[in-house]
Image (tube, rainbow over all chains, first blue to last red):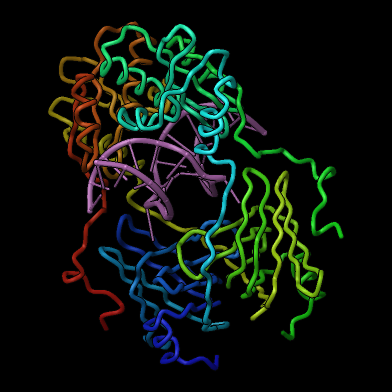
Length: 240
Length: 240
DNA sequence: GGGGAGAGATGCCGC
DNA sequence: GCGGCATTTCTCCCC
């Protein structure tokens, strides 16, 4: 390699992104302990001290560290990259450095995302009839005072309704959450009857059973701007 | 750039990892919809069709796709990388390609990790007095028959005990889980009284309150082989 | 393949 | 800073 140790350490110190491709083994100690024996990996060090170690397969980094202080040195004929954060330590023994590059990257853009659970609760607030005729959401301020309930309102008989939104399949944990909110609201307001509703595109069989056990209800509702595309009806750049 | 489009498409087809550093914008459509305006990014394509787009900061990819079929083409004077999986679509418009590299990586190693919640429940099975004198865990087979309960046993008075382990701070969701398991066991066994215990190094104030409301208990227990190191007492490679 | 649950989860927001 | 909670969560295990 023609990039030397000094240049890499300078890049680490001056917050320049670095990409290494190498054969290495990895030790980690911190929130847990891990060891990864020798193999080929891609190592990325970002401007903010993020360290990522990627194997040739899999979507998640096999090891990582945030806000790391990083150095690279020679040791026993190998390169050794040491990474340290608060109470965490990571050592990479690099037996072969295939490539190393230092970059200057500028990116001020933030991702815009549509279709989150928050978008779903916004949609219900704006279209309360999605739940049922006569459903009247209460103000957002009211709702925050009693916790992180997604949607909170009155039905046509002025019975309080707590709604938990899930953007995909509602599971047992979703019913847990709803049950906890309903219990809390009953206690806070001194009410005997509060309705609980899960709004989601799907619900697991066990979750549906638990829902029924608690006399709660389910509404099949999908997050906004969410289409399960079949690829045939969509014009895309790759089609040109 | 001296790596041409044909070589990149060949790499994508033949499962060779590719690293691109470029200025680009990104559209995603699938489980949600997203748009990311122009900026400098690192793009990794792995041997298994994993696509990762990383900004110069942050530990998570800003966009990603698994099992993707990937092509790169010219379009309107730019490079356009299109990625497609089941019902997901991602387009990257590359206005400037700073570097592109194709790799041949071999890695058959799997990470070994110590200190998980499973290690914690193993520790309690092997050292039941960590919970209290006279606690007798039941067999692992027994426990799997009734669900995913971490530890399941009898106290010295032969009262059933359900234990939920958390490797860090136990929160409201942990109490939800314990409450659901205890309810299930009471129902399955037709019992009036079943004890519930959370074993974790910490517990949040609200979770502790909810625990008390349900007459459950808490034990301060840490996962095995877990040390909060201070860096001074540890010899490391970087110290040499 | 779906359901259930952990993760060295991460990231966001609110107090 | 901690607490609560969503996530294009991801991953693993088990049915």
